[in-house]
Length: 102
View 1 (cartoon, rainbow, N blue to C red):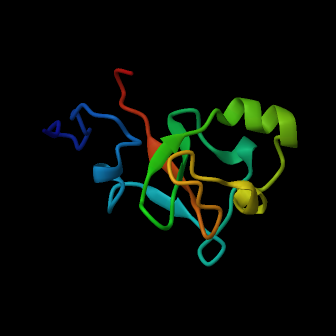
View 2 (view 1 turned 120 degrees about the vertical axis):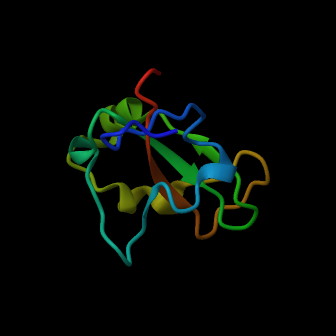
């Protein structure tokens, strides 16, 4: 359901693998990269498995504390590992807009 002024009022989990197509911004080296400090607070950082499309959310504040706020998230892609299948190849970061009532 959408508000008449274009505000999305639908509920749901932004990191749900079924909703990761067309709605979210995939961050990969072919498009662009952002630093932790550039991600607005109303976005959630997650990762997606290339092989089986598993998805999960990441604690971006902890990652920014550990690696630095100015670090480009693309530089951390080689460290991504799927917790369900163990895949370490070609995994992507995902930015998803958090539901406004979350």
